[in-house]
Structure formats: structure tokens, C-alpha cells
Image (cartoon, rainbow, N blue to C red):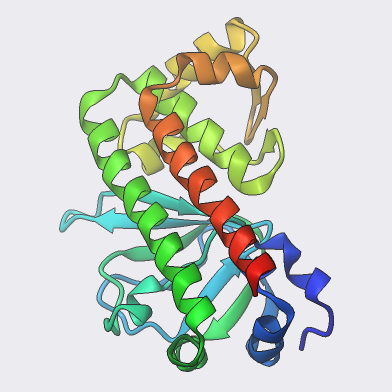
Length: 244
């Protein structure tokens, strides 16, 4: 059980809560360690828990009948999983799987639904987050269809470092290829060019971003569009907290 509001600040949504709101949520939150590739909820499965990541990154994956999949959104310290429980849905339309190991706060879906019904602040907060998340999902779909792989890779790397607040990523080229729905050879070639240009350093299972501004200059507009939407909404959350 959480005892201090500072415990919640690893996740932006939880950290935006005024004291009386987090006091209602805290007894239902459990800090858990998530393993890489851990399946949290499969497509069509009933949602039993929601997760508020602090250091973990969780992928929302669209899976085809042949078993192939592509990432439609990445959820880190800025958000949560399981939003369909707040819109009247009981199941996930896509697979929810841990992409990078780390910690997250777990809460039962039923407890969140109860607090959502009771709290005007929590409803406003979650609706703002849903809006930003839908923007990410829609823009990812457009990006995967229309933009070159090297630009997609820059976008993906920038999203990852934003989610974990670190320039060091423990990821393999195969994982990136799986997330983008492309061949590993394409990722190897694109990452090699970024390495040669001094933008990243990559070794087996690890990528370090060396020049963030350089990556931003080479990324497609999709990264900036989604980031602006999250940045536009997060100040409103802090303002709402002040008002409360």
C-alpha cells in the first residue's frame, strides 16, 4: 500500500492527482515488476487489471491471424493501460505486452471503475489521457503506411526515450522490427546509418541516443505531432490540480 504522494510521481497520471484523490486510489495500487515480453492482457480477453508504468514500457499490439503483429501505441510513465474499462468495454481489442522490463503500479479494473464513477477530477484526467492516446494510435497507423523506415525508426526511438526518461534503451533490433512490423535487416541498415552519423550508439541488445536533436530533425512529423498533444494536455492536468 502507498503511504506518500511522492511515491506516485513516477507516473504522470498518478502524480497529477490532488491529495484527496490519490488517498482514495492509494489503497488499491500495488507496485509490481514487469518482465520483458510479459503478456498483461490478450486481444479479446477480459481486463482484470490496469497498469500505470513508472519505468516499464508496455506495448499495445495489433495481431493478425497469421500471428504477425505491429505496435499501435507505447505506454510508459505518461499513461496507463486498460482504458476500455472506462468507456464501457470489458475486454481489450488488442494485445497488451511488456516491451521493456521495469516497474508499474497495478490496480484492479473494478476499483478504477468505481473511483472513475465517483470522481469528477479522475474522469477529466482520464478523458484527457484517452484523447492523447487516440492521437498516438491514429498517427502511428498513418506513419507505418506513409513514411520511410529510417524516419519511423527515429520516431520510435524518440518515443522510447521519452517513456523511460533515459537515453539508454535495452532493446534488440529484432524487437524494434517486430514493433514496426518490418524485417530485421531493414532495422539493421537504418540503425547502422544513424550510428555512422553519430546520432546513436548501438551494440547487441542496447541502443544509446547520443544526439536527440539530430534524431528529431530526421524523424517524421508524427513524433512532433503526438508529443505536442501530450504536452498540450499535461499542463492542463497540473492546472486542474492547482484549482482543486
